[in-house]
Amino acid sequence: MKAYTEETESEEGFSNYKAVGHALEAPFFEDFEDPSSIALFTVLDVNNDEKTWEWNPSYEAASCMFNEAQSANDWLITPSIHLEPNYLYNLSYKVRAGLADYMERIEVYYGQGNKVESMTQKVLDKTDVIGEQYKVYEHDITVGADGNYNFGFHSISDADRYYLIVDSVQIVKSSSFAAPDSVQGLKATAGEQGAMKAR
Image: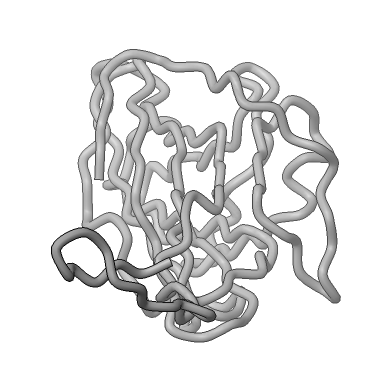
């Protein structure tokens, strides 16, 4: 995991989302620039307090609203994204608090499905979010089986905070670590002083 204290902007371009069945294909990028952007995500208001994740026009980002009386327990889960084994993926996102004096808290998981019980693999442990400046997190992700996966941002801030803000969610296929194919058609010939050479 890498964390940066300054806001960064990606220079990489992304085409429109490409669907694979009911899933999207990496690269996936969402910067929440308009209200419709959050429609692809699943929002779970686990504590049923009607204070949960929404698109926030003030920040042009996804934010989880506070509750004066109880702690947050709300998930923002990405659409399904097709991932393959033997590839390294990079998950990155930006997080900040709505106000400098109000600490927020988040954890991040992933799994196969958009339910709470589907979030089985921890990406980011419980982390305090302090300050109005974005912090960028990056994680390397591998999966053991070909399939569709979802990434969940879990707001667990204390009661009577303000807004927890998430932006620029990105999932990129970065490299393959599959074993190379066996070499075919090698022929050994005698070189100088009897040394064997392969060609």
